[in-house]
Length: 155
Image (cartoon, rainbow, N blue to C red; front, top):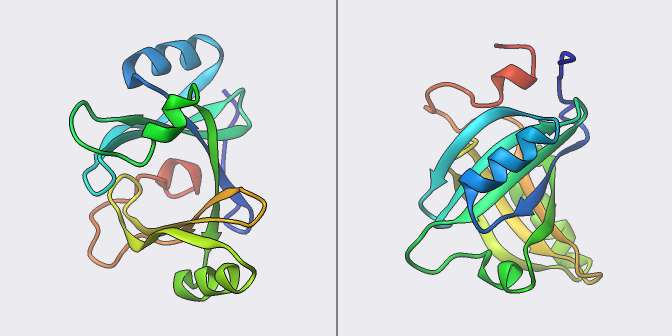
């Protein structure tokens, strides 16, 4: 595998919704993806997320619903799952959300803590229908470890 690093000035990942995390991981890794961040639960969203690097180049976040309770991916799964969102890094989450809102975007998840990557995040839907996740570049204060360390040269 090539050495992979991410550039925090660009897209961080593309989110891909799957019905079953275990099956999806098996399929994606058989097709050349490398697991970087193993599945972890985000209790606020009621989902499990994992991060893969596909063909040594594209970061893909797999998102699967937990068995019980509501979750934000149910409607996407009802349409067959698949590509769901683009995640961009943010230096100022509130300012970036406000800019997108001023351009007509609708906030669907207000700024909050994202347990899987230990960063603050928010989701908006643009007027064009694109779901955008904004995520802080750094972990929240007091977070132990950085799940993205293997990608940013601090492993």
